Image (cartoon, rainbow, N blue to C red):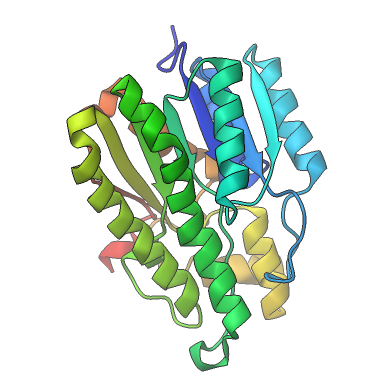
Length: 267
């Protein structure tokens, strides 16, 4: 018997990285999964985002576990797109029990050299996109008087990150959003938490390495230099934390920011 048997999870940024790892962890524990991802490149960031082939792989791996999987191609910056995907998921899979607002980007630049496009894109995806995911599903969860909302912040949502002002500001905002919604939604038995990973071993790190003109190994060393436990955080470790927050094991935890940062935040 799985910890999420009969549950439906809606996950943004699900095509690869932490999103894929979370989707597979939840499917392994019995959940059916709706995957939402943009699966195309943007003018910012400069590194490649997930592609259609990534989404197809994620969906295939979920189905191989015997679970239902839906694929939605959309932009978290568009409330209309995410709301349409949420509505179709509810109609097709019978409801949504868990939302994981995971979609996000990263970038590196001196704070005074950031362009307005870079600032706006970062805040719109990493913070406004989280709000959109919450806004789209909260009325449904209120009607059913239950639900779990889990959003991805970052160690840099509690600890400043030089040369990534826009990223840090967005991730601090996710923590504030989480703590506020936890209080608003508690009367409806909706539990709201976030996770704050350290530097995770995903394609995002490879993209940032190329932006910085670094070899991957050197970028990984530099980007994880604040970790007390050496090395990059595996996406599966982040997924395990999200799974715990989605399960009944954490039913008395709300408004919490769970650090999965290899100890970085305590330095």
